[in-house]
Length: 352
Image 1 (cartoon, one colour):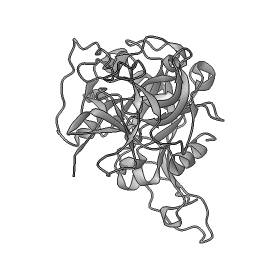
Image 2 (image 1 turned 30 degrees about the vertical axis):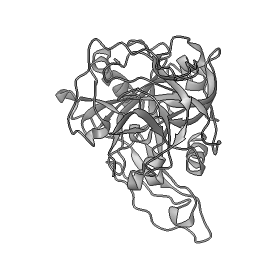
Image 3 (image 1 turned 135 degrees about the vertical axis):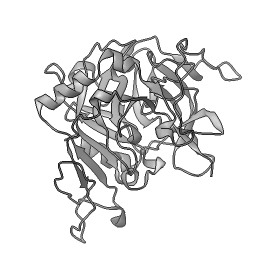
Image 4 (image 1 turned 90 degrees about the horizontal axis):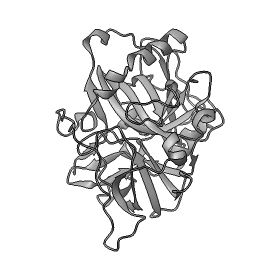
């Protein structure tokens, strides 16, 4: 089997904050079926609540696993205070949860992004990695995620998405929960991040959602996470930056533009970077994902893939997020196909 490289970025947790309390509760949401409700194993946190079943893989209906964080104002302030500019800037990239190399790799201080790689025919619509400088909606809605898993700090990418609650962020599942392992702590989203600036505020998590197959098996085909966030400065995320549209069951093989904040050399994590080109199915047959030629590195996980992208407005429709690369092909990024599972995830999260 070909090894895969997740695109997470991490840094060691400062020792003085290792004792910060973990809060929240986990619930497995499933849709009621004709077979009634049955017990589902709860993923335990210090505050164990209940497990509610609304659907299950056995019934063929996609299921969603939810993690509720502590709702208190003091906890939100603790998370916001944790992510100082210095701590954000010191995050180092690592292969996704050290699954392949098992070692941190140092960030190149000189990395400032790379020039776009054109197709053989010079098509301007294709690039393997270039800094996005045109602003627009994508510059506001795309941002960096800062989180802690098992005592280490990580960096991902994400996007604000249109939703009924006006508080929804879409990212990769491993930027929310370590597969079958721990949920993230200290989770916060910074839309429009540029060189340490937080022009639209920081948004802490109040509810996290992943697909059941990701929570139970770490299935890369379901590496999708959605997070309902708290307001920042009294404003909903959607009111502050807007949100990209999202679509499910879209035709495969179309053109898409991917965005994110790669932090591993030759990038520095401080600028929004994009790739663009046609999507293709996973040639290894190990996932239901689609791939895009892209040189973005660790830290870009969870960044949105937009179809029908309009460079003049920075708007498009999210059809996937950056997930992983195969170890023998570091020039192709893969993202999960947004089908029935992703749609159920969105429907649940968008009204929470």
